Length: 325
Image (cartoon, rainbow, N blue to C red; front, side):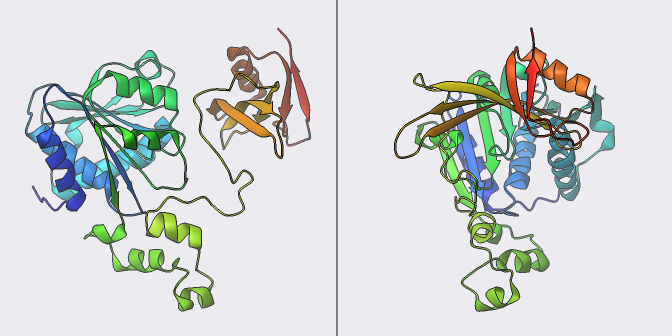
C-alpha cells in the first residue's frame, strides 16, 4: 500500500486505539476546504478494516442525499483507495442504486439520509458510521437515530459555514473529540489550489486590488473558522429541537423545484418586542418533476388548508394553494 495520510489520520488513530471496548467514540472534524478531512477518515477506515479482517463490522457512510453520496463521497472514497493502491472494481456492489464496497472482509455501505427505506429512516445497529458534510442538510432526527444505535465509532466532518448548528452541542460531551484542520495540514495539496484559497484573504492588499478578497470565504474555507455569510436574509439563526409551546400562528410554505429540490416547510411565529421570532421546520426536500409528485408529497405529510407557494411548475405566479382532505 502507498500510505501517506496527514496528521489528522494519526490523531484519529490514536483516539480509536485508546477507546475502551465497552465505549463509543465520537469524532467531529471541523476545518477549511481541502484540509483532507474526508480522505484522512477514509485512511482511518482502511486502517480499521485492515486490523479487523473478516470481523463483519457494520459500516455506513452518509451524506444528506444519495445523489450527493454517490457523486461526492463515493468518488472521494474510490480516488483515495486508488491513491493507496488497493481499489478493486471487483469489490464494488450496487444494491438498488446504493454503492457497497467490500474491504478486507467488511461491507462498507454508502447511503443518503433522504432515503425513506426503513434501513435509513429508522436506522439499524452499526459499528462505524460517518457523516460527510454534516452541516449541509443532514437532518438531526435521522442522524441521532444512527448515533444512538452505533456501538463503536462515529465520525463527522464539515466546513464551518455557520456559527451555530445542533451538532456543535456534541463538543460538550465526554465521549466526543472535535478537531480542527486547514488546507495547510494537507501535505498533498497542489500549489494552484493553495493560491486560490489564499486569494480570499482580505488582509492581503493584492487580493483587495484583484477583487478576490472575501472575508467570509477566507474564514470558512481558508482558516476553517465558524462564520455567517454577510447579507443573509436571516443573519441570526438558532437551532432548536422543535417548535416552542408559545407559538401563536402556524403555516406551511412550498418552493417548487425539479432540477433543484422541491421544499416544503412548516413555519411558526412568536410575536415579541422588538422583533418577532420565526421558526421553520423542513418537512420535505426532493426534486419533483410533475405536479402529481408535489400533490402526493403534500398529502403524505398530512397537510390540509392553505400553503403559501412561490411559483407553479410552469413558472407562473401561484400565491396560495389549497389542499383538501
